[in-house]
Length: 376
Image (cartoon, rainbow, N blue to C red; front, side):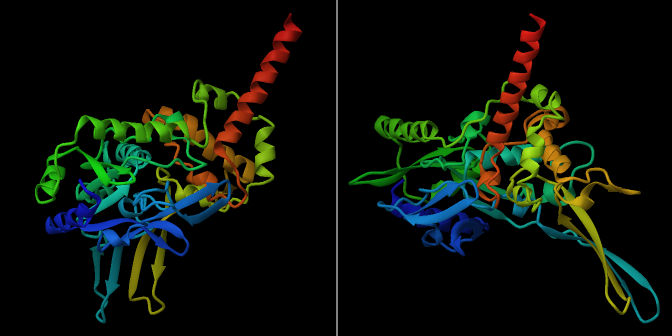
């Protein structure tokens, strides 16, 4: 598909009744927001990321998707930061009525999401949509999503999706997947179909069958991106490693830097912890219960009668990292990390999950070598 047909794709999606959300520039970052047309995309921009560092720069070309990932993920649409669960009102005669607060699902087309985000959706599907007690709002909204993925042409300095086997090429979970090819004389997209809905979108969009050269070029894009990955995480035996190192001295070191600000959990596309808050109007005639995002980094999150189970920052950071990379596997059958690197970029202290895991592995190895030397 030619670059000039991108607007036709937007119109075709909207003709099917979908609102389109996707990456756009707001307040110096590339975030997810409503898109009216292709011109709302961050055309010609890239992001420069590092631990605790993020900025936008102009690209030398006119690439539409020449950036990695921003602070937002699809989570904000499937698991809203704030959701009213119910609302109760009392009239002048004292009669009380209660109405459910579940919002009606929107037909949303998420444009430009990456392979790591598709894997994050699959993880949250298992947690929130499958099983005997699905989250009603999540499950309903999930059925009304159209997913247009983009294979990554740029690896962020904090990305490590290759280590988690979640990218940079989308392999499943999408309706359409685009690979952008930017050349001196051409600018086009190679498109892969993932569903019948995706095929319906393209029926009214000018396109042609890709040739061998274009297919090979698309494969080369993601191979280059994988080779340029900014971080790595050794996952072999990670669960057993973390379980065996609950008292590793590295937890004290990272706790001395962690602010318990919850940024890492807010930007994480798989973290799903929530709390509820009851609100009552001053007149007493209206009350409601609201579900909000919460974080295992807050003191109150593990509060039971008598106090918090995890009263120190050390205990809370250890809980987060160990759950993400170890006990999540026991609970849900997969890692809770997709290697997007958001937690590294948006941590104000620049704490790096890959660095912490590597440090624990290194101290564990030294300890094992000392034990072996003493025994010999």
